[in-house]
Length: 345
Image 1 (cartoon, helix red, strand yellow):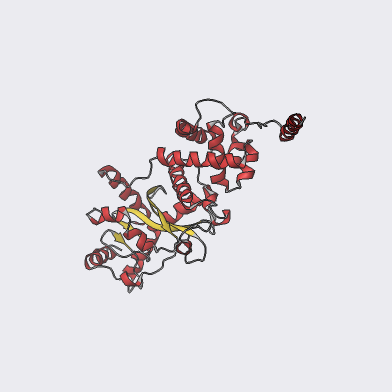
Image 2 (tube, rainbow, N blue to C red):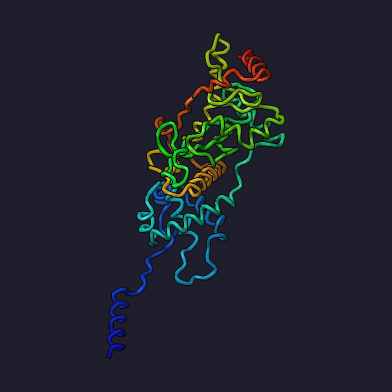
């Protein structure tokens, strides 16, 4: 009798638990028109299909056992989270998967994107360097520019380790991300590993790009007054003394602004990185992975000539020229180079 009673209790519990429910997981790209696809994912159908083809081998299960989530659904939930900056629960409900499945799918897709998309590279060949310099020169006639460098703060949730070092000068937890942009708003160098409290000049001094350029290069980067003046890094003159120096500063600003515009376009397209999108609610390493993936997807958008999103003045990254007093005067060689440049204006 006791065994029968136990059996009945287990049966009742099984009924209460019910059968596993598999919600509808149809591919939205099959039934949404082009306008609806862009409204929902902020990217065109062709671009989304290319991303699916790129990462499919890494994220798709070999069988359909237990109703495995298709690669296209995993990519779509990831892209929607990146471009809309929405909650996992909302994104999961929209695509017929659970909140935990969204988290797992997003991690897989981000990992694959960071590995597969290798499109952030500094110009090295003579043709690339010549083209880059020509495009920059057309902006404000500033010669020999290889790129514009700046840092931007990406909000993250408070990390469990070394929390104070992530509090930036604005008072919130962030990553200090350094990037170099070319004249077409494509990022050609990226450093995403430093906490928000770290100064821009420190990030640059400890970057691979700084060590490479220090060995010798035929050109220079443009940076704001938060960076030290170097023979391969031109900064504005803090207190211009004549009209030529004023003209130099004006040309410098109009040329360097491309990196601020690039940050603005990036954050407008991928709202998870924008301050109005809240914070990246992940562990620190996953936040870094998310940022890198967004930069690489941005470069793909530039290469594919996708229409630029509208960037309001308040949304666009504002370059804060924080003067580095210790290195504001620069070294002797760098000073001579900048003086010769000033005479051109």
